[in-house]
Length: 253
Image (cartoon, rainbow, N blue to C red; front, top):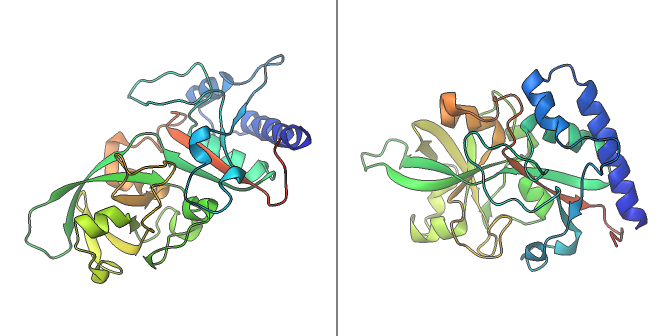
């Protein structure tokens, strides 16, 4: 219980920072205000059963943040429980919750991509993408199968666009060709360098490969890929799931 009290204290401190943040628009503040109340707990930490069998180091240290386990996101979605978070909220929570060794964000749902190797005359093929924070792979503690993973340095506005390919896509769609690492691919018409391939047992925050991403992309590239439909620039729209890894040696129970 001591560990939970520590994390709750940090989350409440982060929410106080959010309320003082001058960069929020009125819409963002109203979104965040749904989770704030003098007599209501702001967050419940959910250690999902689905996280325990993940093929990652110490999966018991992974915790989701939220009131409920949300499943879906659509345009115009309004939440009455805290299950998804705006980009602005994630940035503040990550900075002000030291109880977590890492706090990662990933989009709810997926991103449809049109993919073609740069310079190829082949037809564009459909693929499934997912925007994730730069520390996504570090939070899960996995190592690349080949190449390397992107980091926070790649998840910055103006950084060269990069991507990580899933093992199943690399094997099934690209013939396990090692030359994909370092190669340029057009994703929705924009050049991305594939930095590496994830290990075969890694499906992100899932225990199986159903509807998993073919490519993981840094969150900062979301406006580039989605254009006017960008949710990262939507000033308060909740569209991110958050998963954190508590510091080693702690006992959340």
